[in-house]
Image 1 (cartoon, rainbow, N blue to C red):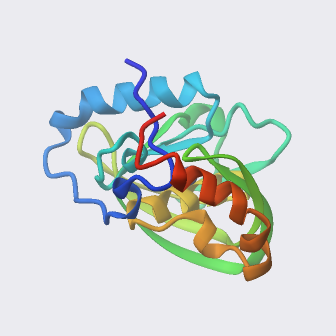
Image 2 (image 1 turned 180 degrees about the vertical axis):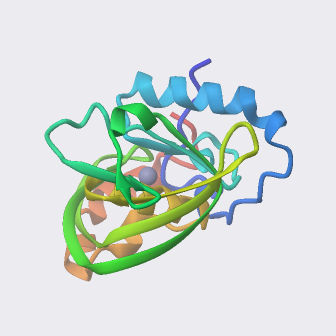
Length: 185
Ligand code: ZN
């Protein structure tokens, strides 16, 4: 089922996600989130964005062939195709490397895009749909997507990383989203 994606102003987006205690209970939600992400050709979707503030997000960078990604498991670089879509439950992250600038948008902020600084590498440890722990290292668009989604799980948003100048440039669009109410699209 395709779910409604909540927009900026919805309180779920500013709520810290609850840990998922029972993985079996979220199988349906994850299926719906994957379907919703695909329906809008998104690279990532956090549970917060469908109004469910949980430590849960889905990511699929395979559609973004113009922006490279890299993924390593146990020190070996792996083929991304074999690992997408990613379902990250209760993820923990550690960042490394210098910050890199890259374009970002967000399904909860239609038509707002900005260059955002993010660390070049991120190591992720999470639980999968079978309840098994797994970990990997990510860079490029995948690393950026993980960091963007992880922010959502903390109740943080990509606009929080904008410089005052960048924020001023999209102030009108942000106001318009807020004025649209706390509404779902
Ligand atoms: Zn987002």
